[in-house]
View 1 (cartoon, helix red, strand yellow):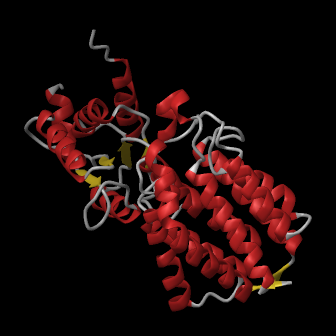
View 2 (cartoon, one colour; view 1 turned 180 degrees about the vertical axis):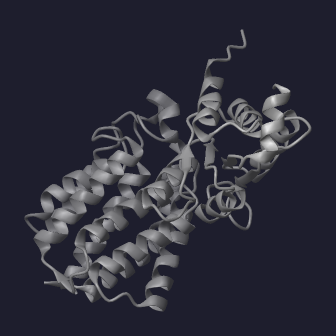
Length: 144
Length: 199
């Protein structure tokens, strides 16, 4: 990340990131990991929405809505999910229209690698489209 | 004509039936799913019954829209957004009329089923709730009893299918030989509709 990008981050509204997993522990840990790897300086707001209210594996529409509202700084919110009901619940909330902040997008990305890419990019002050592109590109990082 | 009371009876009958059948739904969900379909729907429809009692919506559309919203909020599994979308879209398609005809309900349900197909990406034959809902909506033009029978047949016919959507699809050929839990709960929804019409 360039110093210029870092410098601009403080002055601009940052894109918020929401991480939705069936597991509260997975969502919280991936949020912590992504924020940690984004390094010092200004870090984009990240909120986990894991599990169902009261504990247990699953997806909670309420936790997702609350997490999205908590990271909305007016620059849009990128939502990354693991699978199944997490994807379907976010899609449903987007279709309802009034459940999530105005510029909220479900980003098609691998959960861990995409979260790191999204948080690093958003922390540099990138706009929602650039954050989405960086997270989706994480699908292309081959490991062998 | 069908008024808000009819739709409240439908939702109450669904809640009662999901309560009775919760163990069977979860048992069906054990070999090919994550063994939570019965308890998830039980939690959802219990919340639906409570919300309908508390907020007393007074049109057919409002009853189904509120019920769908509750399912999206409370189920916690994929059946929440799927059934929630089915009821909400059906409710929205009914608008704010004080009562609706059977034809209007059938048409609105078709809109709801199409929204579910779009959300989940499932088509007939994928071993999902769609395999009960599509034939049921086709048969509803005839009668509520025909809708119930078609949904039940559709659910039974999922047994030899290989799952192509949802968690069961990870099992590949091993999903063959099990009746789909989602198609089974959809048959309960249609049976409850026929029950509400009989009362």
